[in-house]
Length: 395
Image 1 (cartoon, rainbow, N blue to C red):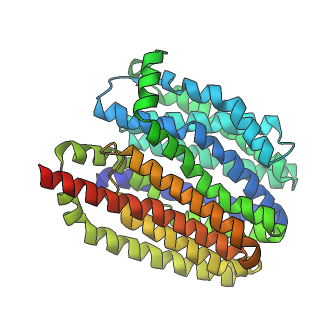
Image 2: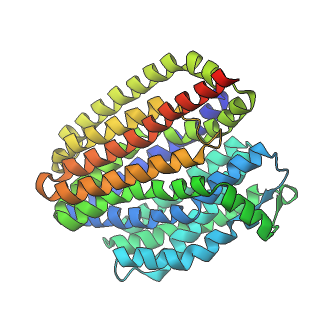
């Protein structure tokens, strides 16, 4: 497991480094106000995850539990049907959204997400990492070209150019990495029905998660100033850096947890791993606190007021690192519990922001996100322990 995590982690370090360089470049050329608008639109577009990631999660579990021999691309047919509705949703929050940008972003996201899902299931982690590296490299190179050759500061045109280039890159990688003998396109509605209904709570839960990264930014945009949106967007960027290890850990852990669940070794895994996980999480948390202090005091002084917002957000990342390895609700197919936690987190997030953000500002947005992470991640770990311990006692 750790060897596979290391493979993805290596590529993820490169990806995050390129992402940091890209953000540093954007911060150099955009004002605080424009950076806020740029980040808000980018977050909004990323909500496309709502119509694809839930099916990816459900298919990953089913493919390992039932040992599918071929990767069936037809299971994402429902995601394609939902694209027009998603466009209307995004256009509701961001009036006059460029259709060209929407199509380029959505196509890039779909191809990269499905390609990574396929490579994850086939456990080809080097190629999985290459997909992320090439996608981020295409974004960075196109950003450099946009600012220094095209010499424009229009953030919408920047995003359009970014995702035209990355779309071409993803298509090329899909052609290179997908093996014909490992895939099929079996548009069997019974299969789609089975996947959707048996995993409906996992699908609903996975659809809720992307909203958590958007809700607080929406309330900052709606109730506070454009400069506040820029400051808070900066906090979110640092927060995302603190989560840099979640992707490699979760990617491999998804499959490893299913294997542990098959052998019913959950309690043994908890006993052997808890101290190591706690120590690792604490080191990451302290390192990101120091990084946040350095960046806001010595590099981006105009974003100094983001310091405490970011610290609160990073408490959420600490909770994620501590609890993620012990959240076995997906592996044991306890999807209803997951959905209940996700729904409660969303509800608390909206209520807290709606009633308090105008009075207390960005700290409320950060706290609501932290509380959501606490409810979902700590809640999932606690429920996993209680439910599976009881099952063990009964056996």
